[in-house]
Length: 423
Ligand SMILES: *Cc1c(COP(=O)(O)O)cnc(C)c1O
Image 1 (spheres, rainbow, N blue to C red):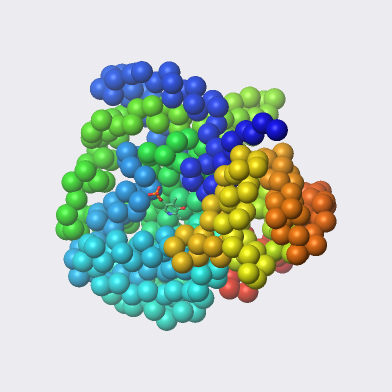
Image 2: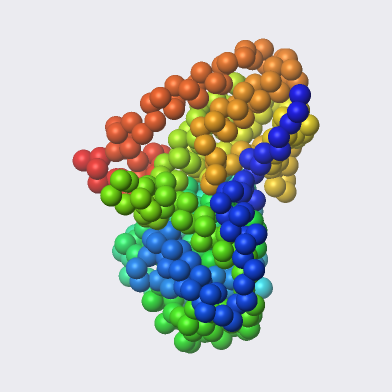
């Protein structure tokens, strides 16, 4: 059999062909009218993709962590008290970054595979808390945190703290409303839901965060957000931007808009296309969860699963690496093992970006091959996972299930905010 290599990893994710073509054609200089037109257009598109009217978009030539660092260095001063909400490797990165910039860090944590309780967040919030850092979705464990719940809590407490959300795998997999919920900074990365290669990060920065920057004094130079905003308003970047990636991003956002094309509006709409992207991720994530359970696996994040990636626990005594290895060697499918101490315990399958029904069904089919051949002790039958996924697909977007969800998209008790549609 021949094998086609396919990424099922939560970053980098599969590349959109239209974006690859745009990249190859992006042979332009960055101090020209041509680039300024491109950059201005892409910044406006990103603003719609993130879904903010009041925020400014800043694009940086870095992986996602660069934007996380920029958020910390621009928004804090040494000695500032900040609160980090963490339940995995990316949450721990916030703690490390804040400490590196001299902040006094309070931490609310939850065990891997779970989300933190909003009551604990409330108790940990102090009068002097200057910023709260969290993930919309924790990619290392496959968990979705309740971003609207945290935002509401800060509002209700009348807190001065800025809410900074790493939505690097949350954007395009989770409904997020920056302006209405009061998120001050929302961070994204190129190699995730926007389906282009690694190398760009972006931040949507709201008015309260811009005001804060007037008074903070942690060191920053390359990632000086105020300097970038000034340049961005003139259609440029302070230093040589990653021109080809910016062209790719424009093409990807055109494609996302086109997913919502209608006869009256053939170009579609980015806001509507983004919703389709989220619905797509939610459906294929739910298909994957149903298939894994039917095949005798356990979900690592059963109560608060994200639609960015599903973390799966194999039966006791089975190293998760066998799934990573067999899927790659037999089927060319690249999934990821657990990070750090979760290695060998879980495997992760991504749903963010350019994945569809066909990809999902094929991966579940390949997983059945691995389970039946390499784990005969499970007595799994061909088709068990596929039947569960097919049924889920046929019943997806059931209005009743939608009404029971929190605004963050989950149905577990850790979410305080019931969707108003439920009443
Ligand atoms: C991928 C990712 C990042 C950024 O990682 P980089 O390797 O710096 O791009 C940050 N947070 C989350 C939740 C991620 O999934």
